[in-house]
Length: 120
Length: 112
Image 1: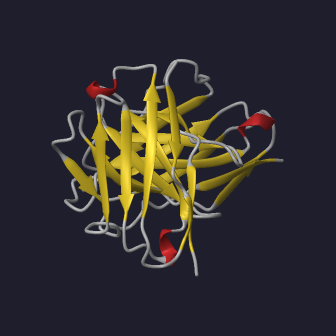
Image 2 (image 1 turned 135 degrees about the vertical axis):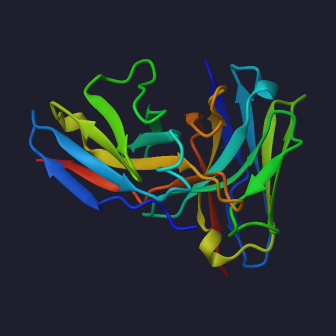
Image 3 (image 1 turned 90 degrees about the vertical axis):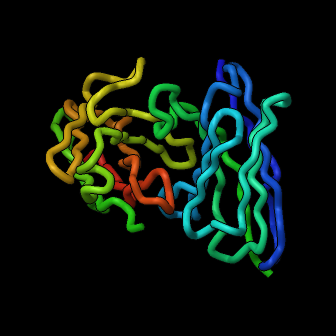
């Protein structure tokens, strides 16, 4: 059974940093692209970032580029998102999502999400 | 990069059919058949309902169907049931260099 378990969210002041983690199990982690998607309270889904299977290729939404860094440790079956220079508008539930194998832009499994609140 | 355009809300009675539209551009919906739809119940995690415009993952009811014409994709739910009441999001691959995937703003489906 595929499982994705996020952790690392919390309350942080503007300008602060957090590192989110997503522990994966139930599938061959290194074979799949992984994504981060966020959802501000009461708002819609927004794609944030993705990494390919070996971590050699990444991409980011313009709103987070230069501030967030996606990475993965395939030995630990864990995906990360480093959040720096946080702003109030980054407040959201952050989901990690496993991509489908054939077309890595579909998210067939999602974690339960971790809430990041940026506030003074 | 603007989000794909969806109606904010749609409604229907049990047993009826409804359609949710999702309008993009030639850089996303119109240019590729990489359109998907997600269902999200309140407080729950999104669930993939449709991929490749019209394919259903295993376990998704055949009451859900997808289509595309030009820059607009559509999700149709037939035989509406109370459990279908949820938010629905379309998504598409985009050739924009600043992101991989673009979502619609979401549509709240109310079953009357």
